[in-house]
Image (cartoon, rainbow, N blue to C red; front, side, top):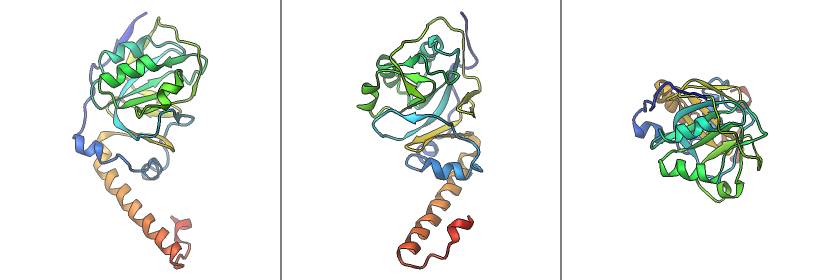
Length: 212
């Protein structure tokens, strides 16, 4: 069945702007996005490195990975392969071989609203992978699918070119156009929270955190 490709590549902001979000907590980023966006139900399967990159999106029918194979022919450095698999957990959409292909292409990681397999290979790797679950059953490879269209990942809409950040708390995304102002707000909140922790340790805390 047909795979529709809306774009063969996605626009990327300046690399230093993307990289500035590496190591910033997804919890604080989420706070500064009105605590609204963020994929629900996904967890990290890799060894622990942070995910930072630009969304290269895939929508496929549940349990089918033909569109992901097509996307792997197109992705480039810094792309996060974001897969809307409908949240289906009955068949794995990627495994060790597709992880290796993505790494070879320079992709930044996987975000999959569905299942994976070959968990040991991901657990031993720093290549980021967030998914719902793991299962040994393999996928269908017949399509249909779409590449670089807006997708829904755990209730969060992610568009091609959005910046995607992931850590131990989960995955959050936002439009590249808002990245610079968001970065300033996140850094400011981190600084405030650091001062709050200092005040607690020094016995000066007056309950201000509960009002923020």
